[in-house]
Length: 89
Image (cartoon, rainbow, N blue to C red):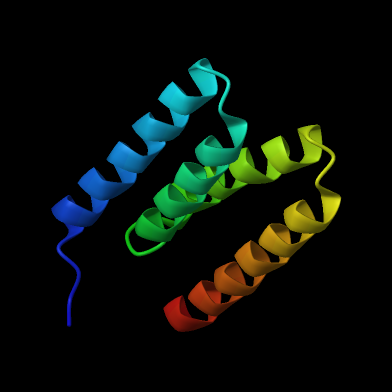
């Protein structure tokens, strides 16, 4: 099954916008969820956008002192990035 790139891009953009709005009102926990969802969408179409979204979530985990969650997400991103690099070679 192929991905409709426009729909996936739009979904990622919506999650990103939701994260930005939630951050603006101070709801960091839900914003992190939205950043991760944006990353999940973007990883199907643009690894740089995915990494950027995941890095937002990681940074907020670090800012909140949630080091284990930040480390787990960082490891997950690294694994996915390595898999993507292997597939493109």
